[in-house]
Length: 516
Image (cartoon, rainbow, N blue to C red; front, top):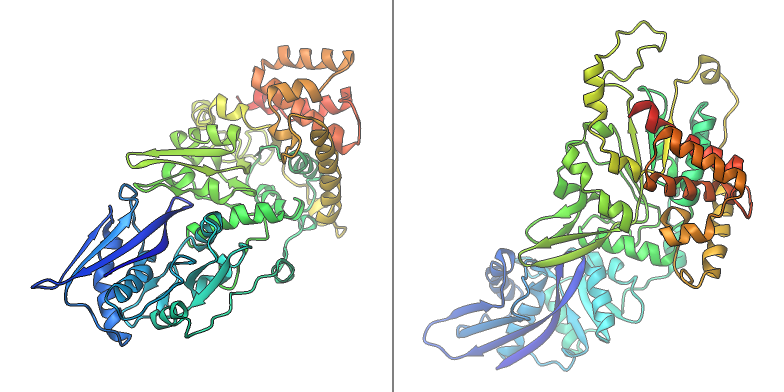
């Protein structure tokens, strides 16, 4: 007999439809043949499935079994095909019949006792089931909360092979796993940190507000202990909450990597990723024989914090150029090409010298060798530096500010400013036919949009011209200044970029000349 079922195989963060066909015919000796470009994890599943069938009380066929996974040219390297193969084997051997194979897909890894174990990427699989117009999908009970986020498709949680058989035959009624967005939001724990924890550094907080308001990349330079990490780690407290679409996009990536926390169906806080400086290129942007997302994709719709920036391998940093400009990364391998979203806000921190201190800091420290300082700073290339909108010097905090009992600007105040500026941007880009309906921010404006939305009066034009000539800035830096100037004007609710706004934006590029 021949049995056909629907399933999915994860490829990157996408779930590709897989048709599982099982044919059983008489043979002198029992033999199982698996075809369809199955990788090691899938090939080994036949042994698990055989024992799962027997230990669940079913009969293992002793004939010739041919299992075909199509499309045949799609690599299938996941244990999630265990359940449909086992069900197909039972159906093809006549141990049960079902009319639900066309309506419900099935995914899941089987244990030797027939229990179902969680797999990666069930959210993407549920999305694929909805796109195919299926009624529902059977998933391991432990991952049902992830798949249930997808509306218009039933998520059926099953704990064992026997339960799956009972559902397909109609003998066992299993209610779809419920999901309510309000319940998920109510379960969010919120942030436990606040910018009021940062003593002093009010100028730095102002720059952070500007960066958050327009989604501008930020580089902080200063000696150890000045609060660079504190400033970066609290960015999520002033950024707007994730929208439903952003939450689904981010959760999909984390689900594909199997990194969702137990009990969580959605990521509701903006990701904050802090990779170590020893990370490889593949670890940062993604890679592998079957492409998988890297740190920048895990930071999608959130913040990527690169501490001790010059300690990163220069080649590793250079691969950030495309994602910083385009908000996505393309990984090409022999088996195919995959594109991962990577729209993040990059925040980097570094010391001014290898030792971490200026020679003239007044503490009597020995100055670094000039050649050593040059080698240290040369690890940051000019093209990468140009792609960072705001360069901020973070000085040492005086004792009087550290000992002051009065708290500084808190996250709530800063967040109000950010939200107000983003509302101004949303209204502007919604009125623009080119960007209507897109989630645009000042930090993502194209050259054409900059010309349209960043008009300068004569005084501001002369100021920018003088700054470009004196500081020797590139054309890309010119556009960055205008983007930041537009955000500063939005924070002031100003229609045009004035000289004051532009002066502050130029000041955020002053470190180009001081350190490089």
